[in-house]
Image 1 (cartoon, rainbow, N blue to C red):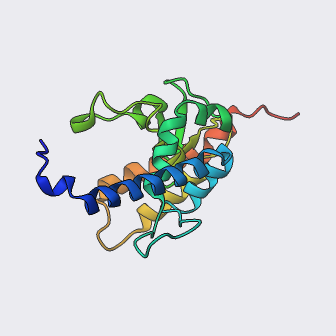
Image 2 (image 1 turned 180 degrees about the vertical axis):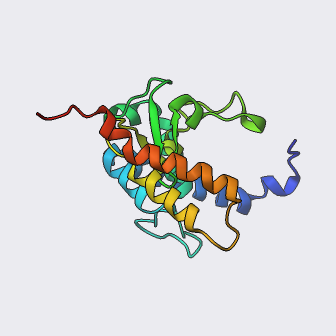
Length: 183
C-alpha cells in the first residue's frame, strides 16, 4: 500500500503531476477521435506506436495510451471492426496459427483470473488475433508447423515433430474436404 509523504505534496511535485495529467488527457483526447480501424491497424503494425508529437525525450511510445483507449472502447472495438464478440467465437493467432475461442484468448488463469475479460483485453485480441474462417486454409499455421518441423537447433523431439507433421497434413488437406466437388 502506498503511503504519501510530505514530499508528495511539494509544490513542484504537484505541478509536475498536473502537467503529466494534462499531457495524458491531451493524448487520450487525440486517440479518442481516431477511427477504430485506424487505431487497430496502428497497433497491429507497431506494438509500440510512436508518438504523433513529443513533449519530452522520454516519449518513445504511446503503447500505454493505445491500450487505455482500447480498454475505454471495450466491446465497441469488435463491433467497429466487424469482428465477432461472442465468447465462443473462434480466433486465429497471427503468429502461430493456433485457433482458440475468444473467451480463452481474452481471459487467463493465474494472477489475473477474473480481472481480464473480452472488453478490457480487446487490445490484446486485436494485436495478436483475428477472426478465424474455417472455410479457408490456415496458412499461418501451415507456415509455423513447417518452420517448427524443420528447426534444427533447439528443435523439437522426434515424437513432437511426428505430431506436427500429422497436424500439418490435416491442415493442408482440411479445406479440400469441406469444399464441394465440381462436376
